[in-house]
Length: 371
Ligand code: NVA
Image (cartoon, rainbow, N blue to C red; front, side):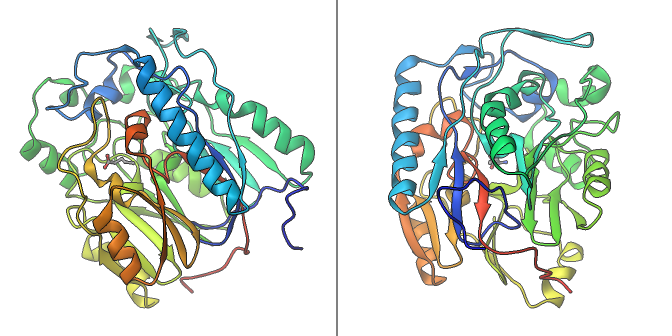
């Protein structure tokens, strides 16, 4: 049955079918959290964020909210239903029997926490202590979907304990250096141990019957095995991108645009031995265009490769950040209509256009693209 804006339905099987309903995050009350093992390992060693924590400056929150509101309006004008989360108080400390952190993170970005697979939205375990309660920002929406859509499955992965046993102490030194980090990444030695299943939703890409999951800092092998057992009707593939010294979240590294076409970060190419399923099925993996910027904006966790963190609206249309002119030009050459969206001043809040959204409904069914 065709999608109707008057009826809530959760369904999304891939990253590219026509988007009808989406969640766009909010910058309200976002914090730079205090030091903790998983987060420290991820903050680049030359970053202006090292050693800082506390509520983000109000003017940056206001500016990010302005951009996120505008993005939501742009999507609405194109007929997409847009929902917004309700921010919890992220200044509250979190204490569990196993750990304490003095503040939380924020209501951004939803893609990290919520994984939509078919009629299900799954709350990820997360791997940072400061993000342990982040799902609460989305509970009012998920409650509403559950009440309005009788097929909706609201699931939550087991909450991890996040004791020190979850983190390799080798990553906790102040200065490691990119050479050492790259060596460790090549050996698949990441900050998270295999103590218990850990995954962030943003390490997962949906290709219909296949789920492609990045093994790195935020998702361990047990997390991937947990996903495999949780989605028994799917094939779950583990991928690595050894050129990335800070491997978290797959969506500035590997970006499917439509069936048969993926854009891959040229500094983080998918290794030959992991390309088999794509090559056998005639998928093309092309190098992404260079980012337009040499550095990320201030107080930003992410790399300049947010340039390729695009939101596909349908197999012919893609939202690209307005200043990312090279990425937009490449999309155009690849036959995509480009929708420009201004978002760079919100990057610091957790990412780009793909990060700051979470799918609720896309047209289409669960296809097998790799038979
Ligand atoms: N690892 C990523 C995260 C972006 C979503 C980066 O390039 O910063």
